[in-house]
Image (cartoon, rainbow, N blue to C red):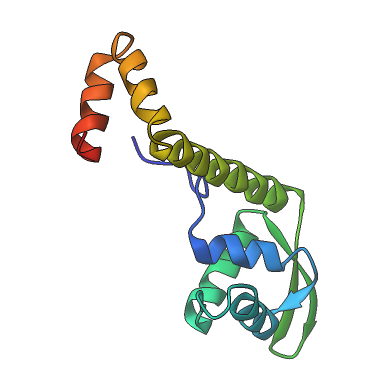
Length: 130
C-alpha cells in the first residue's frame, strides 16, 4: 500500500519546515539549514523550490511576501502538524533503538517477547546476530 503524501518527511523536508517557523525566503532557508546542521545537510535550489511548491500545494506553508522573484514563506497549522508528527515518529525510532541495543536488557526483552511473538523475535535475533 503506498504511503500518503507527506506521511513521513525526508531530512530536507523536515529542515525546511523547521526553518519556516520564522518567515524566510529560499536563500535564508538554504543558509539556515546548513548552519543548523553544521553543514551536514545542504539543500540545493532545485530541491528547495520544488519542495516549497509541493508544500504550498498541500496547504502546509503560506507565501507571506513577494518582491520580484524573491518569495517568503511561513509554516501554517497543517505544516506544523506534519512537522510535529515527524518529530514523534523520529522519537519512536530512537526509542526502539535504545530498547533493542541496551544489552543485556534488550536480550532479556527478546527472550520474554519470544513467547508472545516468536517469529518477530527470531527475525530480530537473526538481524542483530544474537
